[in-house]
Length: 177
Image (cartoon, rainbow, N blue to C red; front, side, top):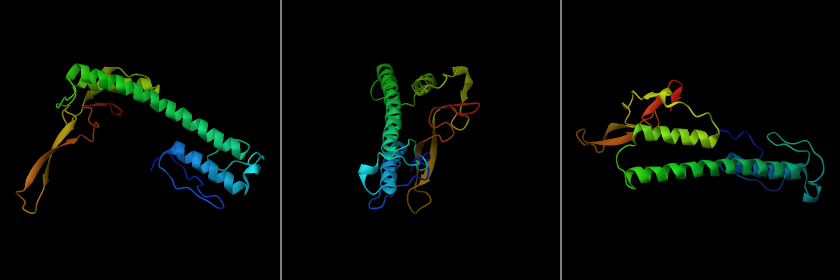
């Protein structure tokens, strides 16, 4: 479930919706549910009414439209991030080949972090702000042994993404790189 989804009304008088876990979609569904709760008939959805929590506008139609506009803004940001990620992935493929099995080099991780920051509108951080992750020694992954059968000697080693750096191999003074 999306941690940003507040307690939204999802039930009207005669119908209801389930949460999708996507805040933008849940907000639209909630706006429709609130409109249905405020008025039994859709022809009244243009009448002024106090908005329910999480919604804005002076009529149910405005609640729905504003929720749709907010979702469109979020999806536009996601599209921009996807375009940046595509550029980075094309760079990875160009630089390392399509089937690179080794962990990504740290300078490439810095490129990915910078591209994401740019796509999100964050201030791009100086690469010197990043330090090698001590939990994985900059690899981005850790060897983890797991017992795979009843006998204690039935152990296999797996590579798992480092939790400390989320697989980047670097962390900043403030946390994950």
